[in-house]
Length: 509
Image 1 (cartoon, helix red, strand yellow):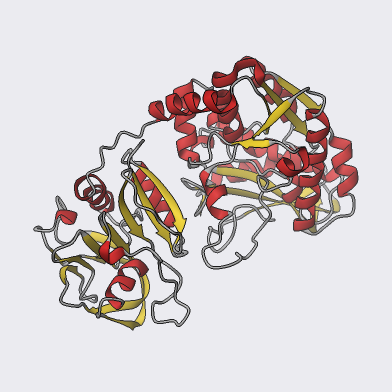
Image 2 (image 1 turned 30 degrees about the horizontal axis):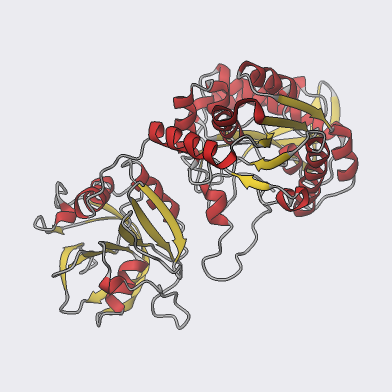
């Protein structure tokens, strides 16, 4: 049993980042809602209370059921977590005169505290809070401050309890990794033995015990997650794994044929199913993005179910679910606002009456790639940009037609191949073209045109939770625009999306 750190999530946008930073220390970490009935067993070595969009001064402020004040293991409160600690032990939290957001420097650091080992005075940290801790109870000592915040960090006088008003998990906190390392490895005394190699060995052994001689059917997408899940399952059950790759008619240009060829090189037992016409017929005239997603999801389930039932005695459904999918399906404070339907949240298990096996459900995307490297999977799978489950349907704004799919496939192909040929593909997290529901006036030769507009979208990110627009060279963008307009019939204007996530999403729908 591996040692682990538990994060109690109060809804912070940075919660997953805390988990990823801890896992980079080769320590396993799990996220639970703040009101989770946490049981401390010998594997749990520490607890983190996350930040939150809430204020501890609100009447409905979330409060953990876990008794952190009498914790058997060390506890670290970050931002809201720290303010909760102060407020509930007789300290004072007040609204800030202005929202404290951005870079700050710790102008006083207690080198006596184990949490600040190897951290220098003046180190840069990242603030993001609307309230400020102005007083602490006599239980705590202040261990750092900034020019505007008297209590930037504190520790309990006798217990292993710490609180930060800043975010050590954020990139802009220069010594943030060192601070988290001090908490996880020194204060919590974790060994740091959770590695890609250990994950593979343990997962394959667990799958063998779980599945035995049973058959598993798995839907492949051509992406990283489903491919790594398939290879792990194959190592465990070999030919008892049956894979199905469905062409929904909304894949990238030549993708169905190319991905099938790559899968054959992996030795996977894969059946390709071309259901393009079926999907496009059902999408005819549909414009609402959520309706499009649901139609595609349901149709995929129907096609997959039909194909899976051609295989006798299948008991398990394999899925490439990863940890963000799991976390996002659990609401922190009641029903979550639906941003979009997730392609892994569907009715397959219920419809097919199968048990589900998800080898990657505890991994983040970057960890899945590391596992793939360890498994010897080709970079063409591992370094492939994420591609939405509904495919080009959510990159065609408005109704979908075969002609629009053709135009978008051609434009997207020019863009993606251009990124690869110019050494830019691996510097971008995700890229693609979007078909806009507008026509614009143009001039080609001596003739007036009134044709379609394409938007190019490229972002940089580490996990897709936050993203910045990719600052691609102007020369590349100019050449790409010129090639698309000249080579793709039906397009006379190309634009480039320079919005980040948040507030925008990576995909347009």
